[in-house]
Image 1 (tube, rainbow, N blue to C red):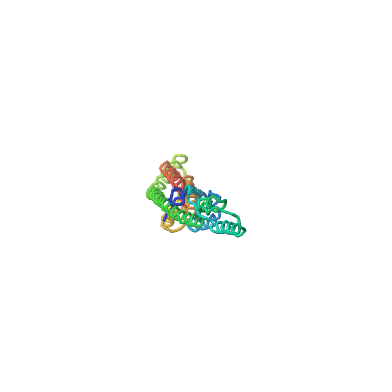
Image 2 (cartoon, rainbow, N blue to C red; image 1 turned 45 degrees about the vertical axis):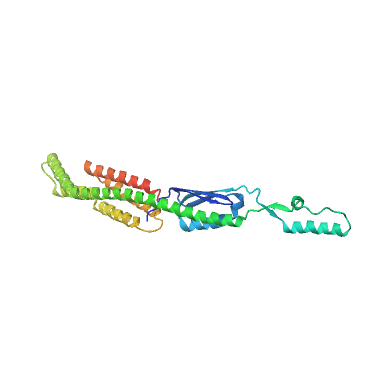
Length: 287
């Protein structure tokens, strides 16, 4: 399936401990170039994230940004049991020493430094959920690349159809063009001299036919078009292969133009080059 290298996705998750927000952007690039922006507290999950990305995408510049917005946990308090036992043990020591003490007030115990602590956020769960959300975002990004890739695929096929039509038209014109040029050359030579050298005339006709012979170029154009169609149906990255085929198509179109001996084939060569350039621009964005 043809994949574009351009896509965007935003994934968000709400949990009691806060919110996670992933934004993934993908643009065309010659190779795979990932850039991660993570909160410092989640930096250690970057390695597994890169590995997941590398297995899923082959080309493109990927910008992956994670935002973590923790909930305000003030008021969610816990008692440090170890610290509380230390305070109670100290009061027992004082009582045994004969120190007169008022009955212990629980609120006063809670106010003792270190007894009452805020609950600490378990970052293990945050990291786990961040990776799950990233995979969801990655799947959505790939789906977007595939949707746009299908559109690019259709645009390229339309231009391939146009190239096939032009090439077929050129093939049908060639015999008539060569015969007309042969007749024109013979007429001009007759006007130049009443005594024609048959050998010279034949030589000129052969040279003309050789210059106008573009059968090989036309055949290669058709072969390259068939190969482009075949590559478009392949799985995996195909952008570089398509780019190479565009160079070959352009080479044959240039040769066709240089061998042109009439305006009709010149126009056909120009139309071919325009169609090939349009495809090349689209292919620059294919994975």
